[in-house]
Structures are given as structure tokens and as C-alpha cells.
Image (cartoon, rainbow over all chains, first blue to last red):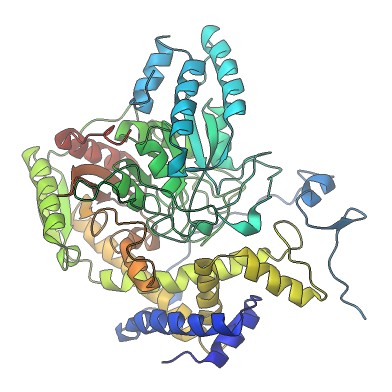
Length: 94
Length: 486
């Protein structure tokens, strides 16, 4: 299979990573090479593998209790922009 | 004092009061300062280390020494360290100062170990040569005999951890292994590194790459050193839902060379394509184990060739989800823009390096509508077949012996253009992560060019003690020159 520039543009949007036109061309070449290598997996017969036949290790759940209240300063101290103890982002409502 | 000592030797020196922690820490700081050209540290915490050493000296003098008291180590820069910058090798985290400590680095701190700083690594642990760090490449302290002026890679992604130990900048280091990132750099730098069973060490506070594969582990000069460090890094943690609730053995107390009656598997698929130097090294390992009474059994791990392509679907898929958090809102760098979408896209364009962007794109693609089953579901099924391969093998053998890498360390500028060629570095290590098994790399010889080569031992889940003990048999037979690059 081939990866088109349209595919690259779509993945770039889904990934929220801006790519210039030149970067898209480089990415197209590299992804095409990687996927042509990955596609060797299509030769493996997995018809007898049912993922549900393999019980996943049981993951435990923590008790739902408050352990660290009032962490506003710690939570926001690394934010690029903070206003009124909240994360500030560009305006999203017209 | 010089830094040509192992962690075990330094521990004994402190216990016998042959030196103080302050003297020990100062010696390693001096060496780290003299070897800044290797670019091992992203952030140095030398002043804090000396203050901690003074505290350790007081405890030692008062007879209240902690298990690792006063021993200078360093942390891979993906372990969140409270109040100390943690970058994961990325520009997007260049100013991130965690308000909390990772469980693993915290465990070592509680045991008295002293952190000299944060070690360089491939960005978000994505790489096999430490060439993908936003803070520049790490240089391997080893030099080839044929081209002594050529800078070599230390391997990756834990390149800073491996190079710093090999160069005598610290006694041991934390590292992490998602597809070989402990074992491959350990082999390239002539040190020992163990990737434990998935879940043995907590992932809490480790910057995530691929959560079903990531595992913390130690690196150090010797097996005994790694045994000491792992004992204090591992353990159940209710903050990591995949943490194993098992008793951690006293690896050091139980450490003894083991080989007699041991069934050692040699996977025939690992021999195909292995160069003559690799074949010779493997034969040496076989000889050493046989001489001590081990039985060599040829086995088949028929899914071996499928492991890397499977990994390059599953790991990027998980990475694309894990790295979605870097959006310039809650922490990390931001590129200011007029709209929120533009801010996300520009932040991630400028903040991530080329390899990270590539893997996020791969992961996003294989998880996208229309491709999920063809790629992701199929890869999960092949992963099950890989695990089954090992289950069958461990019915016949106790451990598996393989090379750690296809060859010795290569030049900093030798092979950087083709991503797939770089991915093949992990061909012998990646199966272990997919099957959640432990694996250890032991330095056992030198290439014709005088560069370190390692052998890997793979065991069933929770067989770390067996790997240490069989590894010790190899270590004692190999008589590797541990301090040649110091």
C-alpha cells in the first residue's frame, strides 16, 4: 500500500501536529518505507488467534478517596499561562 | 580517589568507613565535570548531592545507615524528580519541574542513594542511539582501535545512563526499557542492564512512552550492582494499576553462579543473519555455561521476525495516545497562536523532534478508522503468538541465551537517515517486552575493534534471580574489563 500526501495531511490533522508542505513530503517517504516494512505482518496467519481467549491480567482499582486535596498551586505551577488559578487558553467562543 | 569502582565495592568502603560519602560523591562529581564532553547529563544536581552526602555521612557515623546510604547514582531524565527539571529529552518539557517524585527514584532516595542529576536520553525514550535527544547526542566513552578519533553512539534510549556508568560518572543509574532501551545501550557501553518483568517496578512518575511495554530497570557495572539496585527500585505500588503485588527477593543474598543442570535454550531464528563475530561470542557463552554443567538445547521462536513490525504498531499506537497530553495547556512549552487548534498544532510541531512526530503519526494512522483492525488488532494477535512462542520454549528450557545486539556501537554519523535501519538495532531485545518477560545484558567480550559486546539472557516471568545467577556465571567466566573506558 502507499501513503499519499492526502493521507499525511489527514494524519497530521488527527495528530494535531502542523507540518509544512516540505515536511509532509519527507514524512510521506518515510512513512511509506516504514509501512512497507510493517506490512510483512499480513503474511502471518492470525485466524486462530482470538484475543478474548487470553484473559488480561486483572488490574486492581484504588479506593475512591481523596488523597491530596488543595493542590491548585502544584497542578498549575508548570502551566504556560494561568489565570484565576485556572489554565488559560486562547479564546474558543466567538 | 578515582571512580574505577563498582557500586558493591563503594558500598563496602562506606560500610568499613574507608571513605566518606562526601569524598565518594566529590570524586564522581569531579569525573562528571571532567567528562562533560560526553554530554551524559541534561541537568546536574551536584550541590544537592553534596548536601545529601553530608547527611549520609552523619547517619553512617551514628550507625543509622540506610541500605544505599551515600552511594552516588543518577536518574534517566524520564523519572519525575520533585523540584528537579525533568525533560524526557524533549524540548516540549524543557522547563518542566515536577511537583512530585516518581516511585522508583523515590524508592532509591528513601534507601539513601544520592542523585547526581538527570541523564540524557532519546526524546520520550524513542531511539536506539541517543541521537534523538533535544539536548544533543551522548558520546560513548569507548573508542574503537581502528578509528580512535571517531565518536560512537552509546545506544539508546538510555544512552546517558549507560555512558555515564561506563565513564565512571556514577556508580549506577535508573533506566527504562520499552523495546531494548536498557539492554542495547548496556551492550554498547560494556555494562550490565536488566529489564525486569513487566510490572515489577512501578511506572508511576515515569514519563510514559508505550504503557504496555515500558519497564523501569537498573544499569551498573556488574550483576551484583544491578541486584542491589533492583531490590530497592522494585516493589508493589498502588499508584500503578499494572504493578505486581509480589515479594521482591533479596537478590544479593541469593546471588551465586548457577549453571549446573541448567537447560539453556538457543533460538535458531536468532542465529540466522548473525555475523561471524556474533556467532563467535555466542559460542563463547555456550562454552562457559557448558563448562559449568549446563545443557544447551536448540529451540525455535518462530515469530521472531514478526516482533519488530509488531512493536512498531503497538508502541507508536500507545505513544500517540500518551503524548496527546502535550498540548501546551497544563504543562510544557506552548507556541502562542490565535486559535486553540493552531496553538495545539504549532506547540506540537515545535516541541517534538522528528522521530517523536514520526511515531505519533504512525500510531495515529494505525488507530484511525478503517485501519485499526488491519494494523492494531492484527499486531495484538501477533503479540499473543510471540508470547506463546516463549511459553512453549520455557517448557523445554530454563533460560534463553542470545546476543544482545547485532553488532558493536556504531559512529555518531554512520546510519541516521533510514528509520527502519535504526529500528533493527532492537531485533534481539524487543520480543522480551512484547512478552512481558525479564531480560538481562551482560558484557562478555570485545569486538575485533576493541568495542564491548553483550550476551542476553531471557527468562520466564519473575525469574530475575535466575537471570542474575546465570549472568554471574557468564560474568565470572568473561572477565570483562569493566573500567577500560573510565
